[in-house]
Amino acid sequence: MRSTLDTNILINLGRIYPRDIFGSLWDSIESAITNGEVCICAAVLRELNRGGDVLHSWAKSFPGFTCQPTADELMTVAEIGLAHPDWVQGQLNEADPFVVAHAKWNHAPIVTEENRKGPGTIDENLKIPNVADEHGVKCQKFFEFVRSQGWSF
Image 1 (cartoon, helix red, strand yellow):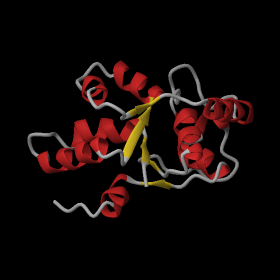
Image 2: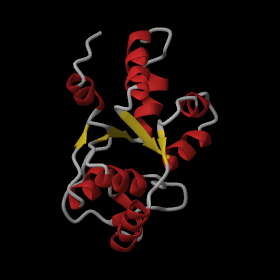
Image 3: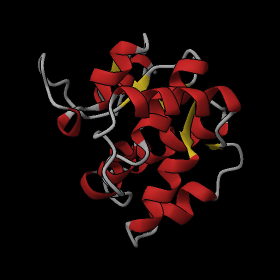
């Protein structure tokens, strides 16, 4: 099953798991990308571009890794915007509705390190798992994803 990666997964990969120490982890991620097992949304790629590091060019170097939004996904993004008008604030959470919409229409889990907030959370404090729940999308943490792939280092 193809998984949709949240921006924080790639940022953490670069910051916490440097390639010179965790080379086999990077090799496994790159193999999953090449085999079409993971993807990112174009909005995630835009967020990576704002980081000013090599992650943007690294992600861009893999054909098929970045998915453009479909008409159905854009409709879901609009629905999310209507349901949670204060969730996206400028660049804050900009990619999140696209990540949820992409995962929904591709029946794919989202790999994210975000934690679900409790009931009654105001829109500006929502996290991907909250909105994903509303759209029947499963979320998993990075290590849960790694285990599901059968990777061991």
